[in-house]
Length: 267
Ligand SMILES: [Zn+2]
Ligand SMILES: [Zn+2]
Image (cartoon, rainbow, N blue to C red; front, side, top):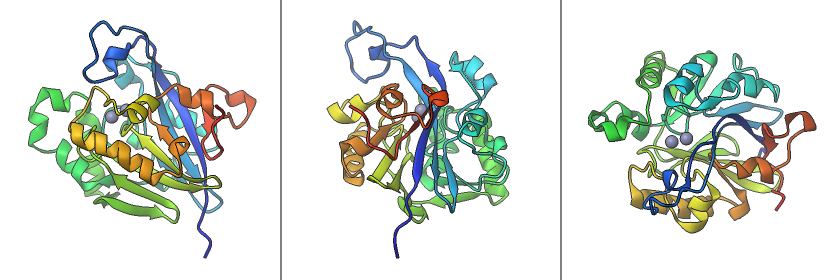
């Protein structure tokens, strides 16, 4: 049996331009104030047989609340590559941070693939600590709880297959139950790191992002990303503006918004 292969897209839906290096890395000197913008993406994994969306972004209310720039709703960005969120059947939620688990209501036909450890984390005692609950929205968490009760959450515990050629892997670190997604493509296995590596620099230099539940798991997660990917050029960080520079747009109209990750990066 030949393994299924997929096209993979990153779709940018928002950005935060006024951000500095010291706001992105743990333990940096406070004087490291060079700008380092952060982009927000959702991802599409697709072939003739199926379409899987990875993460659901956030909406206008969340953007206003957090001072982020929402350029388009995730569903509007996904429509640019022909994805109708009303009909998507599988959504992988890498973790439940506010920028990955909003707009769940835009996916009324979907099963949500989530790690058990993440759900337990966001509904348990750790959320009594403001420092730990800060990246989450209680509205998103409650909506996911409702999805659990309506039988629409598929829980995974560690490594699991979502579809032939698409697997999830719990790495932890940034959030307790964060998972990355490994996808078989024409160029070999590509790993969507989501927030297991926000920027190329995190994984290339072993420098954790500033929001970290467990530093050791974060660093071991970088090692795991390298093992799961066909090469370092097959690891796609979750928030790096360089992703849109390194990978080609599927067509000119989408330049700066969408890029194809199943082809080799340029430079
Ligand atoms: Zn996160
Ligand atoms: Zn994030």
